[in-house]
Image 1 (cartoon, one colour):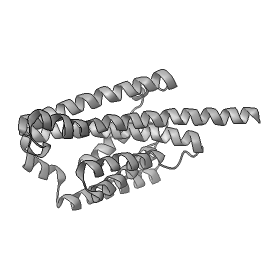
Image 2 (cartoon, helix red, strand yellow):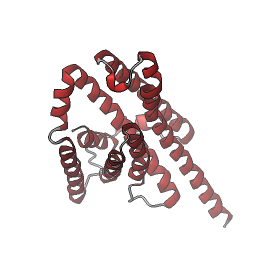
Image 3 (spheres, one colour):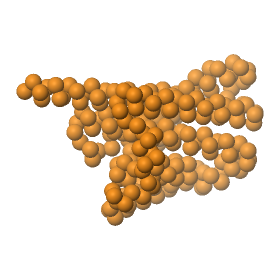
Image 4 (cartoon, one colour):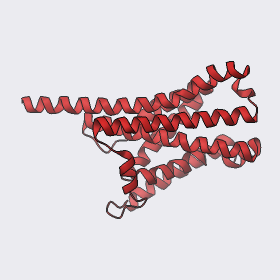
Length: 235
């Protein structure tokens, strides 16, 4: 009985630690709000919507730099305190793992989720998001914006990974996309606040849930999940 209580306590503590990592990553994402709505408007004496080309590029470069550094520090903290080395695991995991193959049913569900996201994006943008942003931004801004998107997807994936591990420790259920739920609650809320639109927040939250499902459907293959999430979010 005592061993059972100790084991449950240990799992709860471990899950709480992983949840902490997920929330730390979300905090890293949230740095952009501080930068865009407090620091830069005072520095440039203008709203972010009125930034010129150079100011916009600087915003994305600084944001991506902080995001990259923040993500690295969280992963490093996880390796030190929990023994999980995501960087080392990433190096050793092939995009298509023959030892842990994805079943046909899983591929069908992955394809369905991808198509759902692409169709909803097409409807939301009244056409191709990529072409629309390219025509609006031009080649230079378009390039930096899509680099920014690549960093954003990486952070979202980290929230999914850590969130999934946290709730699996607590529930023992490894088939429900807890990480996607956490992304829906955090990333979705962040978009609601930053965009000032509940509809945008709900749309992002739904996408986050799909992303979390894809992570499980790829058998937790981080490389493949990242590629798929980039396609689903960026395109």
